[in-house]
Image (cartoon, rainbow, N blue to C red):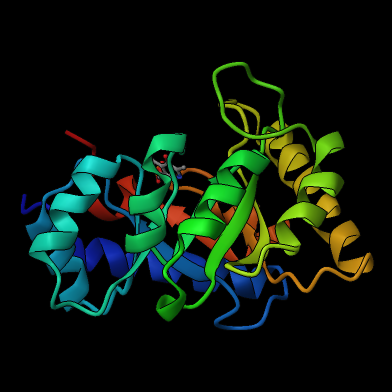
Length: 229
Ligand SMILES: *Cc1c(COP(=O)(O)O)cnc(C)c1O
């Protein structure tokens, strides 16, 4: 049996996204697909790029920088989705268009100061630790209003919305409840007047649930590239 290529798998993911949009009454094209390429080779990214993929997400900075160097001529939008160390903010501010994993003011301030003006504001999502897991980054929901207000004041950043990874669970109900909490927090911020538009939630195993709960951006690795090495 021939194994499926990246192009075919990418098409399957697009179909899943379209179906989920339809089933939950969401507008076509309202969900952005970010291909999560951590541990994948530059060749794998090129393959996805050839099939029309433009947004790529990376977790590990050193690995990302190497791929960015070999893919400098491609028109890729790079998303940083891993934990941000404060001594790495300069290079992140320089090389990425988006950071999904901001969870403290110190990091936001450094990204703001270090973002080169000619690149325009860096797009920021605040990561929420929705299930209060000690192993995960992100802030508690109670701390969101203050951090959101502080980030919105930084001119080198553009506060776009929220990111979360629900705890691993066999129960679709539990995952759904976590997504619903994030979605409610997002709606609260909108009601307070924050001009946000991005709810970064949903991965290979739960993108349908995330889209049903209002996700506008899914981060998909395994379903596109296969198991990580
Ligand atoms: C690895 C990763 C993903 C992709 O996960 P898959 O289950 O492989 O789709 C999405 N978001 C973050 C933050 C990740 O680290």
